[in-house]
Image (cartoon, rainbow, N blue to C red; front, side, top):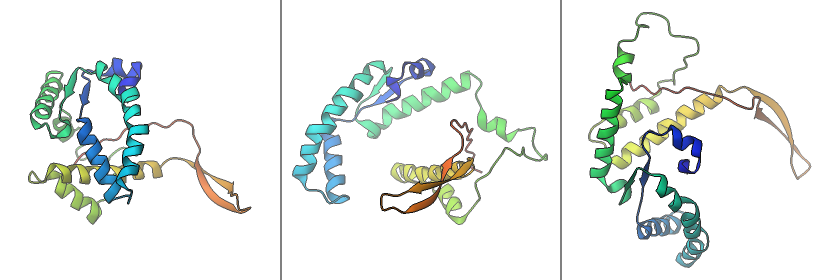
Length: 196
């Protein structure tokens, strides 16, 4: 959906559309909805044909025209993905972008960290996820799973630092609930993930 916004398109150096065959998408949806959501196959197919497929054809498929590279067979196309990763890596090096080496040679060695730096607490759960993410033997699916879990914790941690104000919400049952609401309209965060 990022390809819909013309301003975002101008900022992108390379635009990649990862395409998966429609039969594979349908099979995944059937498997997920039947096994995990307890739905019947006819209901899943009806919803797919009435809403999902037309939405894909109307909103997603046209954005393929904006892509520089279209990767067929989705995330299973290791050759295409490795070529893209290699190209991006080479482009970053050509532009002098070496974040890891710059962080390692940081001038902050031995000096206190800035007050604006907040570090996610190293719990056994976080350490365990780091172990899976760093292990070269971790399967692709496990890597994605643990990366997403770690990102959720990181975003939860970042969101917990937002300024909140107390609010009282009136429920339809003539009851009230004391809650919180974000106290600012726009917030910006820089998140740097360093696996130590």
